[in-house]
Length: 213
Length: 205
Image (cartoon, rainbow over all chains, first blue to last red; front, top):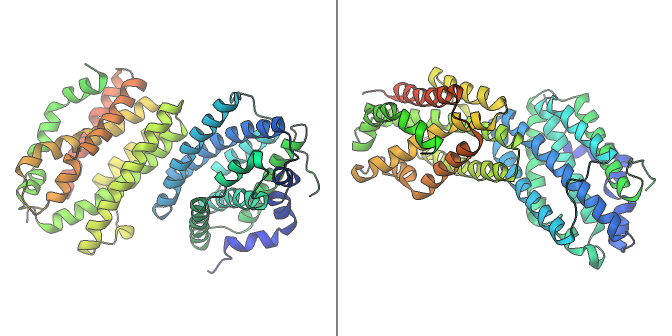
């Protein structure tokens, strides 16, 4: 049975995709209108998110088919390095990484825990969506205002783009050979919603109330 | 003596049995039938994929950066080991993606994953360490008397880099495991499963 490649999902969810990848927070990073304190508060929350993502991806590695292992293992190791990078940034800026999660961060964490119980094809599609949104979002924010330029560059390296492409191929393989269907669409939409709320958190009160793009 | 050293010393008889196993002996002197070695490599590749999964559980349950960094380092190591298996497989025309595990392989992988899924890092290390320490021991013991036939395999496990990986997981074991009856049982069971793995792989002719 031929199934639709996951790359066809963004155009099918065009409005939500645009909310997730072209959010006003990203425009503010590009234009330099976001305050340093708002950016740093978001950075601390993103550290918490990456910690949750690492656990999700490590669990996925433990149950994914062998052909998905190389890309998942490489990604897990990169996430461990990424946490170290966050810790360096936090030390330099005297940020408290033990700050409790804000509601949008907690909601994203809950979504990842639900995806632990989803089929592998659904979980792989969600993982690809998370990373693809991140890549496209920071590409949208590029080059970034001078204060944020190094961050934007860090989150859109060619190596990261290659990894996202490998994840797409892996998700496609899983969707083509396993049960996918409506659950893939639902998970994809849930990721986009969580991403939009995560960006909105940086500009709002932490609840992640969606703002119009 | 650290816990890892105590556990290894406590199982010295099984380690000696592994070194004297005909599969290992004939691998060292080059008389092991090629089919036996090829089947072993295929089963070992399947087994190492389970190691990757167990490291995944280890990472997911890591309580601190030390554990995270160590499991990440070990995961890189096992991926490199799998690349070696892939190169053997290519050389001998084995399709690793279609390998079906034999009962001895399944018994070992199911044991590893059952322990690792519990999320107790110390116990996970107790299940994973024996394989690493035993292979480092075999590689180092055989390196002085290896024939040309399987020298690449022995060289890999005799390499100081592999010793470093074995020592790395032993340090993690020392930090996160206590000297309990369950830890001793899990460690010993893993070595017994290693012996059963060699038994299953050995075809005398």
